[in-house]
Image (tube, rainbow, N blue to C red; front, side, top):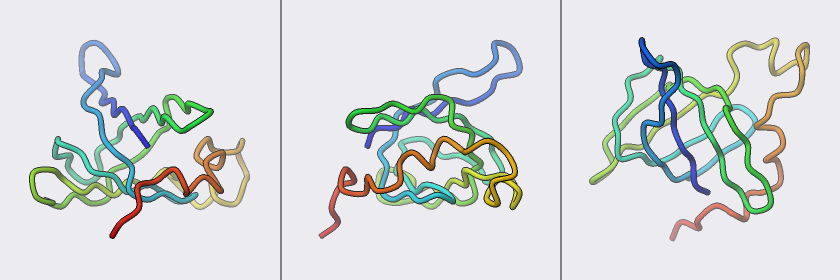
Length: 108
């Protein structure tokens, strides 16, 4: 699944940073490979392109970043608090991806 990553700039608001590829996702977060290194605690917005749907401006926080060959393996959290998981707020966009794991690349 293709993912466009946006980062907030002091002047100019949210700007496109890079394109990444999803490795794994669930309702708590998403793992991806990116050509750009991002520091933990960085807040980003994601546009996720899945077959049949596009989710725009999904908020996420970088929780891990490790070198993986020529790219970086990023771990992103899509929920900011347990209240989000408990459903006390409107449903989070990432929930719409549930059951779409077959679109992810298969690891050998």
